[in-house]
Image (cartoon, rainbow, N blue to C red):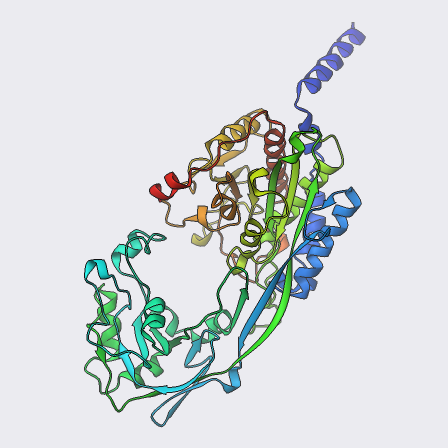
Length: 528
C-alpha cells in the first residue's frame, strides 16, 4: 500500500511538472547566488562607478560580452561586434582659468559661480528679464523695449505656471525658453538666479563642469549658462532699483519683478575657459535567435542600463565611488541571468534582443541612439522590457522617510501597461498569476504621477517610436545616486523573483501568435 501511495504521489508530481509551461524550469536557473556573484563585480570599486564614458564602464561591458560568448549569444551590435559606440564630444571647464569680475571684485569658479562649459571671454552690460520665458500668442514678452543684443541676461530659475502644468508640451503652447530667446536675440550668456543652487555651488560643480554630447543626438551648446552665489548676485544688484534678495523674494511668490536694464556703467567680465576632447562609450548588444523560421525575424527586446555616475570629485574620507549596486547594477545582472536562461536551453519562437545601454544617466543616450540607429529593423521589435533598479526592498521597521517608496520583498513597481501597453499588461498578469504571484504595484503607471517615471528610463526611447514598453522598478531610496548604493543592501531573493517573472513575460511574448498592439502616440500625447 505504501509503495502504491508513493508511486501515485510521484505520478502526481510528474503530471504537475509536465503541466507547467516550459519556461518555468528555465526561469528557476536564475538564482540569488549567481546574481550576487555578478553584482559583486559590476558594482565593485574596481569599476569606479561605471561613468559614461570611462574605463570602468568599458570593463563592465567586456564582462557582459565574455559571458554572452560563452553561452553562444550572437553579436547584435555594429560591424559584426557586440557593441554600438557612442562617440562623445566632451567639453570641460578649465577651472583655474575661468573667472568672473564685477568692477574691482573677482569671483572664483566652484566657489562663487558655476557655468556650463561653453567658451566665452567678454565684458558686457546686464539686463534682468524675469524668468525669461516669452509667449507671443499670449502677449507675454519680458524683452519688450529692451536691447539685449551683446548683453548678459539675468533670469530667475523656474517656469510660468502654464508651462509647469503642461510640462513637455510647452513648445506646442507657444512658449519660448530663456535659452531660445537668448540665442535668437543675440545675448552673450544667461546668468540664472537659483536659490536652490546658490547656497551649494561647490556641490553642483561636478555636474556643471563637464558636458558630454553624443554628436548624432545633441547639438553642441551655444549659450553659456551661469549660476551665481549670493555673494556674486549681491555685487551685481548693489545700488540697483531692486536687490538680489528682493528679486528672490518676489519670485518665490510666483511673480518675478518687471524686466529692467542694470546701470549702464555696470559690466560683468566673464571668462569661461573650455577644453574639448573626443571619447567613446559602448552599448552592449546580443541576439538569441528564435526557433521559428518565420517569427525569428521579430524580436522581444530586453534592456538595462549598465552605466552609473562615476566618482565624486570631492567628499569626505576615501569612499567617493558611486558603485551603483541598485542603479543599475541590479538590472544589468538580472538581464545577464535572463540571457543565460534563454541561451542555454530550449528557445521560444521569436528572437531575443539583449541591450546593456551606456549613457542612461546622461539622458537615455544609449537607448536613444539605438532607436535612431537600430542594428535590427525597428519595425521588427515587438516590445521593450526594461529593468532599472530592481534590487531593493523596504526592510521591516525602516522609518527613513527617503525609503518610504521602496517596494516590499515580494513587490515590484510596473510602469507602462496602464499608460500605453495594455496588451503587455495582460500577458504579465497571466504569467505572474501562474508562477510567483508577486505584488505588481501600478502606482507609478500613470501620467499624473508627479515623479513622471514613465518618461525617465530607457523603455521610453522605444515607446517614442511606437514600440510597446514596460518598466520594472523597486523604488527610489535614500541611497539613490549616493556612494552608499552598495551590494550589501541588495535583496537577492527578490531580484531573482523579479528576473524570473521578467523571463516568463519575455518568453510568453516571444512565443505568442500575435504581436502586442503598437503604442498610439497621438493618444499618449493627448493624455500627457
